[in-house]
Image (cartoon, rainbow, N blue to C red; front, side, top):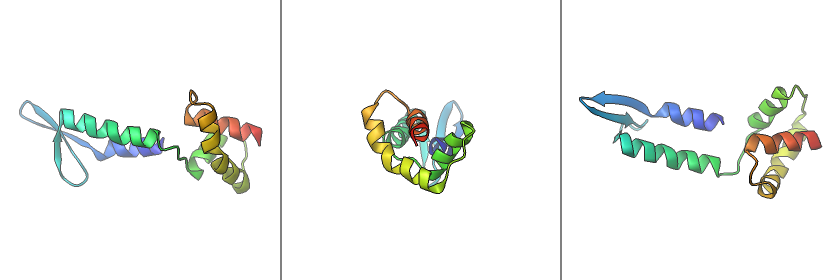
Length: 103
């Protein structure tokens, strides 16, 4: 997901002597263990949020080489959460792909 890539680019890794630390966008320095913990919490929140965007649906449709209308995208967005709950083993892109094919 684009949100995770954006999050990963927000933490700048720096070295000071033998210490490695990350710098958050706010300028706060967090050291390796804290940085990993911070990142894990943020990623968990993003992955478990059950939210997808119009761009996510459009990207999957393009990968499938399918044309999709705004109305179809809206339908996928409306149906997504229920579909994701029905198949907890599927990742978000599989759920979106199945929804697109079912339109």
